[in-house]
Length: 332
Image 1: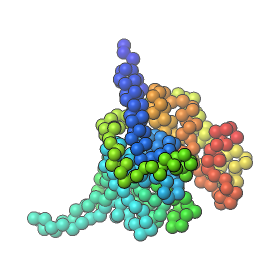
Image 2: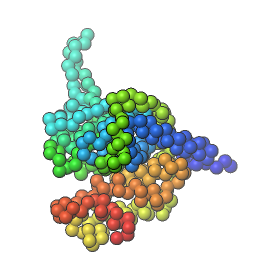
Image 3: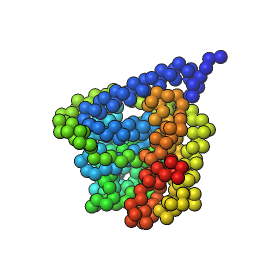
Image 4: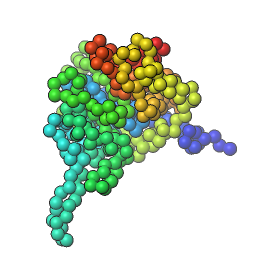
């Protein structure tokens, strides 16, 4: 009897897919390096989101290259990209679409005109500058891959990704991202200012000339195949136990004593699923055919930081969700 891999495919087919995925990661990194200097963690985080089939939120000050990075990624994967610039006056119809009156042979008719959400990669730029009503317009699309308008359902993708950028909440003109909206993102990546050596390299890059030089290195069909491969990677009971223990310990009643005054709400079950998906993608990007506890630990900050709701006392004392996650990983 021939051995089979995690999806029931012959082992040699699974191994070939793993090698192709690993090679694709290297080629995408190389293409993104044409326009992005440094930011390796952000690049790998976006790739984890893509292969896991999840949405990604990038937070950082303006001017750090977040939008440019997402645009370059769309070119490297040849995805249909639409960009929505979120502003305080943006309305849900500006994202989802609206009914338009058209003249036909049978007379006037209402036709649904699709909005920018109908793309394969949606760039939601500065998402937290829009009001909560407009932010909520993305909930169904991100959770279920569909848009319901006037009792009619319109499917999105596959593939379908929302990759959003947001400014730090203490910057002028921002709205807090509602907890339900933030929970739809598989990961939240923090984009720090570049180091001095990277900044010197950035001075030699002309984005307007470098972005068109990015070429497609992964086909759409290959991306869907890689996603299926990632979903099928086996995770041992010890890995799942690590995820469950970590998530349960984020709850206020179970949080370590030194952080009890600071945590109002812990990670949701969706967060546990997200952590397992990200760990699988990270393992696949490394060319492995199984998930390890180290994959979980490496994925935990990005998957959990936006799902832990902190109190006002935490902000006053400058305690962050990353501090809480680090303490939990350290066993504190």
